[in-house]
Image 1 (cartoon, rainbow over the protein chains, first blue to last red):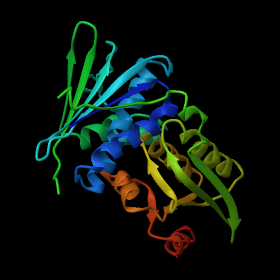
Image 2: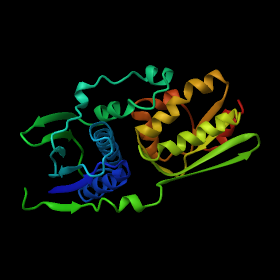
Image 3: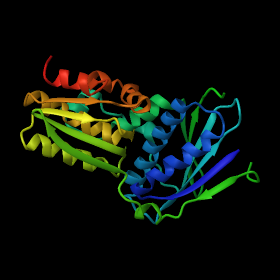
Image 4: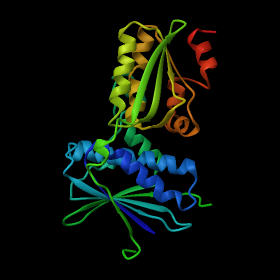
Length: 139
Length: 134
């Protein structure tokens, strides 16, 4: 089953993103705690993309796809017009740095890397795809 | 795959018309400044949490309890707000304790081990004991 969602790059749309992911996964027997971690990771990915690649322009749209097949890893895709915010290229600050420099950012990328099993980017002629893979236990 | 696609599209303007997703209340009791966070804290709403804590610290409160019992969700933007006050609390001898988190919110803090860096209590009673140094 594939779920799709199109969203504009306003951070006020993040709640809609979270509701979409939660609703899609709930139907498939994914545990509450897995869902809450995945929702968090995808919120972080989308807010990074909206803020850093699209400067919160609500007219810029990207698409989310969720591919759910029972007893297979969950596949999440963020499909954008070519703008890439590659978190693998980012060296996240240490927690010490965050405390001492009173930085309010930098935790999101750490969360995504802790939660997701694999993050890969694919560049096509007119679009870029960020694919996040997560192994979960289905009940 | 494409044929079975269950397509859902968002009306982009819809969510803009929603009220803010977090409401923050403050009250003072027994020399303690209580900050109650109700709802969801993400990149769009973390500023309200930041302003409220800044106000409390700015007014000179040195016992600050954050009631998280109605906090339904927090993303890194909110976690970052709490982290950004650790140093200031230490420097100015301010005791800031979070309490009452639900299981999912508590898990969010523990993914990166932030529960070890912040003062977190199970409930209000324990939080008051911590803030009063009992």
